[in-house]
Amino acid sequence: MIFEKTFDNLAETDERLLKEYFDGYDYQSSSHTFLANYIWRNTHHLSWQVIGEYLCIAGRGDVGEDEKVYFMSFPLTRTGSYDVDALRYTIEEAKKIFEARGQQLEISLIPGHLIHYLTEAMGGAVDPQHDRDDDDYIYLKEDLVSLKGRKLHQKKNHLNFFLRNYDFTYEEATPDMVPEIREYIRSKNEYKLGETPEEWKDILEMENVAIDELLKFVGKGLLTGVIRIGGKIEAVTLGEFARSTDKETVIVHVEKADDRIRGLYQAINNEFCRRLPEETVYVNREEDMGMENLRQTKLSYKPYMMGEKYSTIVK
Image (cartoon, rainbow, N blue to C red; front, top):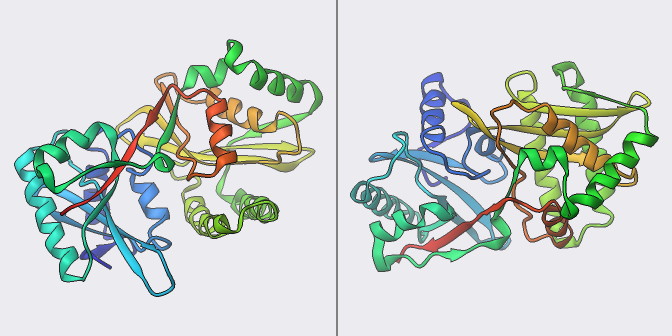
């Protein structure tokens, strides 16, 4: 670990402190929520520390069997704003901590609209590079509900086919359904393994771990949707509000459906979005991780905007 604390066995005061930072700014990013960090805490060896005015989170990305490379996400503020001098101090102190552990400081998952703070604070010591594979796909809820217009005509056709030809029920998940949902998702990932390139199979296995953690929050604020056909689960979606202080943006962390059933993916997405609060405007469906088939699927829903992400080595 790089920093002093982990996301395991959090004291109530620490959990409250962390949530103040995650809620402190509209990061417009699926990577910048308490839940997103909590569920990936073990697979990415996450640790955290408040340095100066900001919360710093470090994680590990293994690039080889013996090589462990750490990164830090963009420091989080609890005040709703950033001070350039205070940000410079935090990054310079974090750099010392990284170097003391034999690591150079790489800052990753930097939301595009925060780049100017980084360059103002660090000048020529940083050279942010766009990480296209990490960009979030952000849609208007209304577009996903109505599927209006020529650009979404095919999605509407698939949805209508499903509605005409299948007798289904939609429900929110309850804690007693968790074992059934877990088994369904694992079976879907196992099915996907057979058609997934070798280099992506580790991602599916890590996803199973993260989903197990996510399911602990069923009945505790997690947004859920389940479609049953003939009483059997055939589609699941799991998400959260980007900030606990408002409902403007929803992040969809998991969406699984049987792609052999025409229109089922469109149905779980549509049913879930139709039930979101009136004040919800945006639906963030996360990144594509560079997986071409996933990229084409996400693009086919015509995102309203992309939540760009950047990374940089601090020289």
